[in-house]
Amino acid sequence: MNMTQSEPTPVLPLILPLGDRGLLVRFGEALSDEANRAAIALAGHIEAAAIPDVLEVVPNLISVLVRYEPARLTFERLAGEIRLLASAGDDRQSAGAEHRVAVRFDGEDLESVAGLLGLSVGDFLRAHNVAPLRVLATGFAPGFIYCGLHPETLVVPRRNVVRRQVPAGTVLFAAGQTAITSTAIPTGWHVLGHTGFRNFDPAAEPPTRVRAGDRVAFEAAP
Amino acid sequence: MDRAAFERAGGWLGAAGTTGIEFTTAGIGFVADASVSMAVDGGAFELSIDGEAKSWPSRALLKAGAVVDIRPGSLGNYGYLRFDRQIEVPLVMGSRATSSIAGIGGFEGRALKAGDVLALGATLPRGRGQHPTQAALADGPIRVIWGIHADRFSNAIRQRFVTDEFVVSPQLDRMGVRLADPLQVFADAAILSLVSDAVAPGDIQILGDGTPIVLMRDHQPTGGYPRIATVISADIDRFAQVRPGAPVRFEPVTVAHAQGLKP
Image 1: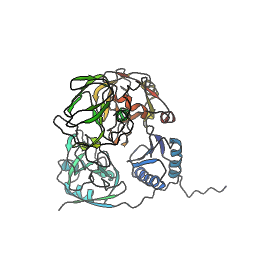
Image 2: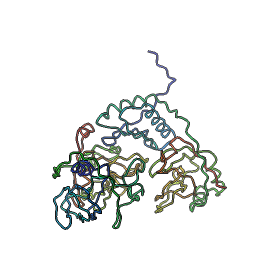
Image 3: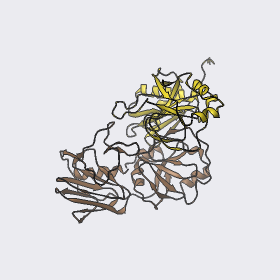
Image 4: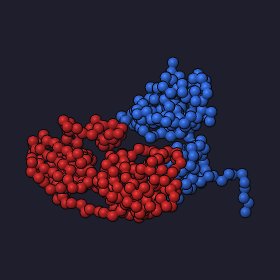
């Protein structure tokens, strides 16, 4: 048999039960751009496959949650279908929407973040806003958006102290990511600023408009 | 929290729409402004109507002006009150349920408080109601499926997790139930930080200080603490009713076994 070497073997994700009504497909153990892209792409393929009795497909940072109806679909059968979709190794994803987010960079942690990175506030903001970021995941709180990944030169750890509450529209920064809140939440991330951009309206259908894989362009509000 | 009890209360009426009121061991009291049928179930509470003690679970036709008082009884953390009418609250994202954590849905997105007035819809077309009877009390260990991070724990810790006893702590709400770990099963479970991942109801996460928390119906959608196991669907209602101070043990089962069980 003639084995060609040109096609790299796709890295197969781990498929795990998450309780008796959920299945989790996880790409590795660490957050990387590659694992995140693979998770978002696979979520798209599972949605497109329209497997009967799959109730919900949710991409996370490095995994995909698939909720299913166990009375009609077993874990083994679903895992088999997903293994086939994953082994295609197709990490192309549909081009997401681009969102422009105007930010008042007036956050209480802006100067300390720039200081941690050894940059002036102006240089930090130029580096931060230089290119659109990818939406890595949504969720955690209603409408919450994780964007990234920043290069290693822009990575700071979370704060040691959790703020009890920041309002909707707070722009947060930590762990190589920039996040936007759409509801008031407690957070250990650094506050860079505030925006009028909202990604949660319970009266709208759907209530959120940003999807994992979209791009977000941050710019200083005039 | 106890979906089977919510369903049973509706079953006693024959028709209760999709709505009901969940109450805790704080109890609940109300006055019926008009004649209405009600049913109650879940745990074992003390019910009185116009000062007269009634059995539990119960169904009753309330006259206009009837005073209903429900106080904690011998069993359970949650009880359910339903009517032969829909409770009129707005439909939010396809649901009339309340998320008090997000402040969305139900009655102003919050728990009811003294003085609130609830509107009820028209009487629902009646199905065949059943005479209320006490549900059989299941006991034995709470059954779990090994969790998405079970492999991060040592064999010794996994073994002790399914043999040692834990105790339900007083820190419980719709989001999660903290367990006391008197035998220190998780005292030395040092786990490196994990990437946030999807959470399912029943997931048992272990905090950095070794405290186990069983995540319940209003759990956060994602979490970064390691999860050793997930309570199976058939046992979540029963676990929700275990009172603070009571012991609890866990038993691992397969996914296929869990899926073959009825709640």
